[in-house]
Length: 225
Image 1 (cartoon, rainbow, N blue to C red):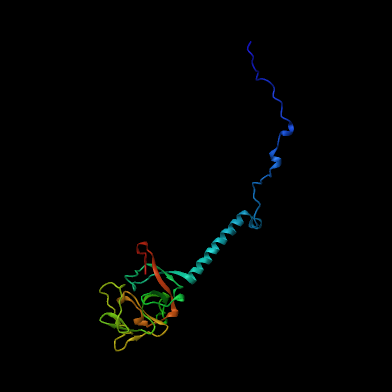
Image 2 (cartoon, rainbow, N blue to C red; image 1 turned 180 degrees about the horizontal axis):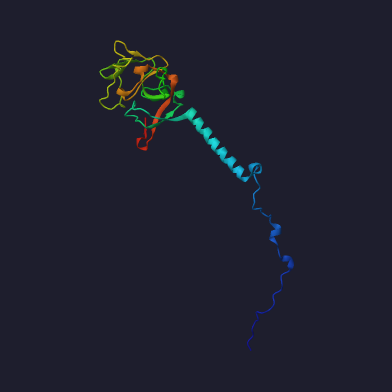
C-alpha cells in the first residue's frame, strides 16, 4: 500500500498584530514646497519677474563696470589707419593698460579728439604712437626719424611715404618737432590720408582712452594689433 503526503492541509493564520501599516511610521512628504519670501510677498509670477529683473540689472551693472574701467569696443569710421584698420572694423580697447605701464612706441591708441579738431561729431580718434616724451621727430626722404635715426615701421606696407610737406608741423631737420614730457606723437598708418600730430601736434597722454589690441569684427578681419 503506497503512502502519500497530502498538501492540502490548512496553514495557521498569521496573528493580526503582525500586520504593519508603514504609512503610520514614515513621515508624510508634502509635494507642495512652502513658498519662499519673494513668493509670499509678490506671488509666484511676481517672484519670477523680480528674480529675472535682478539678473538683468546685475548684467547691466557688470557691463557698465567693464565699459568704464576695463574694455570698450570702437567702430572705425575712416581709412586713416589703413591697411591696419579698415572702415567698418571694430576693435577692443584696453582702458586699464596705461594705468599699469607707460605708453609704448608702436601702440595703437584711442584718444579724445584735440580741442582744435572739436568741430567733428566723432569724439575719439585712433592712431599709432610714433614719438614718446622727449623725442625729436623729423621727416626726411619720405621716412620718419626719431632723434636722428630712421624709425623702423614694419606695420606699413612697402612704398608708403611719410611726409609733412603740407601740414602745419613740417618737422624738418632744421626745425624738428619736439615731444613735450607727458605727451606723445601719433600718426595714422595711412600717411597720405590721416589728420594726426602733423596737423594738431603732440597729444596729452591724459587724453588717451586706452590701447586698441584686437580687431573683433568682421570675423574675417579678426587679428591682434
